[in-house]
Image 1 (cartoon, rainbow, N blue to C red):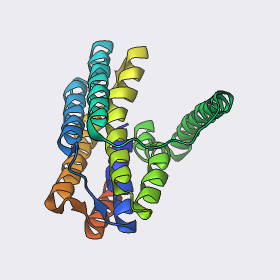
Image 2 (cartoon, rainbow, N blue to C red; image 1 turned 180 degrees about the vertical axis):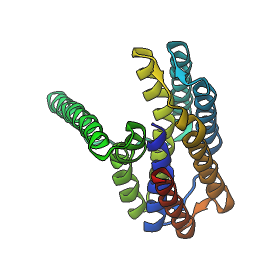
Image 3 (cartoon, rainbow, N blue to C red; image 1 turned 135 degrees about the horizontal axis):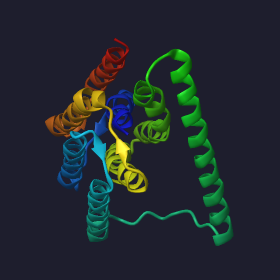
Length: 234
């Protein structure tokens, strides 16, 4: 999750901004960024003791519910409806279950492959999770955001990343720790959590300077991601 959130901002927003500068919509910006920063700080506080238990998981999931409720209210208050392609119920169910099966199989292969790489390369599973697994799980966001930026839908490109990062912390970690408490490696607490917070602050700064993420800022983000990956190899 930590590696994915870092990659989402520095790698994916960076690439998307290089494809086309990202215009930042002001509607809902304060609410979304408040939740993103709040979720990041909450996780950092919880993880400081090196353990994510069920009580903390419940708090994370409660935060996700609150975020979804407020987002839906904002949508009902003024966001124009988007006409969705019509699908019959049987076809929609087939799409759903096929997509779910592919996702589950992909996740299984990704985890087994990552563990095998860690063993063969002689590196820790934490490093593999922060790099290969993080980028692998962020590929859907990469495709969505780059295509959205290319087609001029910058609100989708940015919203995809912000929403994904919030859901990663509040939803994915919350649900996982609710099933089984998670030990948190000390190196993530001491280093990578702070990189995630710094990347989040950088994203907000890039957004509010001109309400636009420029190609130059995108290049800086990509450079910082390369530097971050290099630092893990040291």
